[in-house]
Length: 247
Image 1 (cartoon, rainbow, N blue to C red):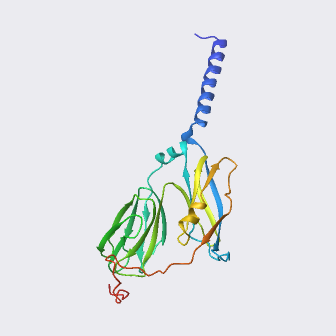
Image 2: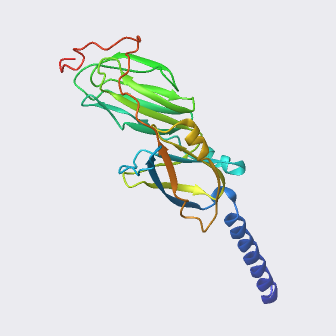
C-alpha cells in the first residue's frame, strides 16, 4: 500500500504529464488557428483615371507558400455548381480551386449545350435536356469562358486558382476571405476587363499573422470592354432564331 507522500508525488507527476499533453496539442500545426481577412478594391478607367461605380467581380486570392500548403489536404472537397436557368448561367462568375469538379445542371424547360473552347479548360458537354446534369473537372489554371451553343446570350466565367483562400468583391469593392491560416502567401488579382500586364503588376507577397485583419487597398485599372459577341462552338455565327423560347 502506498503512503500519502507517494500518492502526492504520483499525482503531481500525472498532472505534469497532462499539462505537457495540452501544450503539445496547442502547438500542433494541424490545429493552427485561422483568420478572417478583409480588403478593399477600387476600379478606375485606364487613361482617364475616373473611378468606376461598380467594383464587383474582382477576384483576390492568396496562394500559400511553404508549410501552409499542407492545410488543404485536411479539408473535404467542396461541391461547385453553375446552374442553367432562365437562359442564363448562375453564377456568372464562379471561382474554384485547381482540380475541382463543377456541376452544370439544366434547370430550364429546354435543351442547352454548354461548351468552353476559347481559353482555359476546353470542353463540350453536348446537347442535354431539362433536368439533366453534367460535370467537368477544372484542372487548368486561369479563366474558362463558358457559353451555350444554342443561346448566344448565355455567357459566364469559371476562374480556376491554385488556392483555397479567395474572395470576390461586391459592388462597393469589399473583399472577404475566410479561414486563412497564418503564414506566407502570394496575393493575386483577376478582373475580366483588365489586361494581364495590369493584373501581374498587382501581385504581392503577404504575411498573415495573428494581428492581420485587413489587406491594403487594391486599385485595378479597367480597360475598355470588348465586344460581347462570340461565335458558336463551330466558329460560326449563331442561328438568328436561337433566342426563341421553344428550344
